[in-house]
Image 1: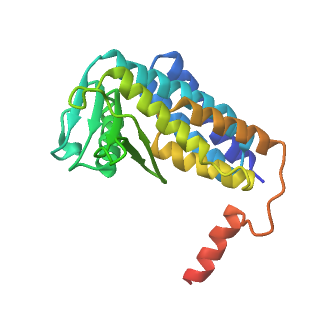
Image 2: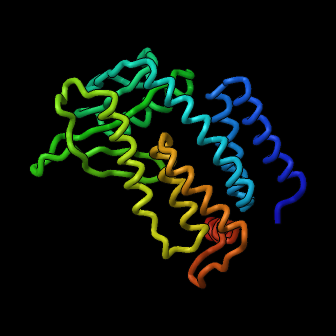
Length: 235
């Protein structure tokens, strides 16, 4: 059971995120909402997670919109991404750079508060499709039709690719798992691909359902119990 002090800290993060949104500070709002979401998950405050998730979704939507509004496309296939001077816009990461480089690029942009969209694509396969991938708490990979002009992908192709990647992530959530496991699966996929509104909406819906109460399967382990087991084994 969450203590009043712990719940107050979560509420404070939510208030800070909403205040930042009202000031148009998308990066600050995203940081506060993301921290609040993590805190709420640890406390299993699913109703709070559902509320905070929608603030996080809007902060990220605004940030992504700024990236597309820049109307610039950059293709990266070399260099150390963390050391690059970034500009607002859309970035395509391609071989020999990989998904891990795309993640580092995205995190560097968040750190520096530069609005960018990042998509990692792999070489076109024998079926004529272009694999796209995102890496984070899990790996999300699917295949889409390549850009008509690969060396000059359009903003609409990038937007569609990001949407398809997120849609695939949602499709692979196993509805047969306990609600908390589904929530953790979506959180891991959002960590890999944070710029998909549908993932946030899916998470909010799952959290709303979990807040009504659910029974864990016999084989399912409570996160706190799992922590205690790990601590015992390490002694």
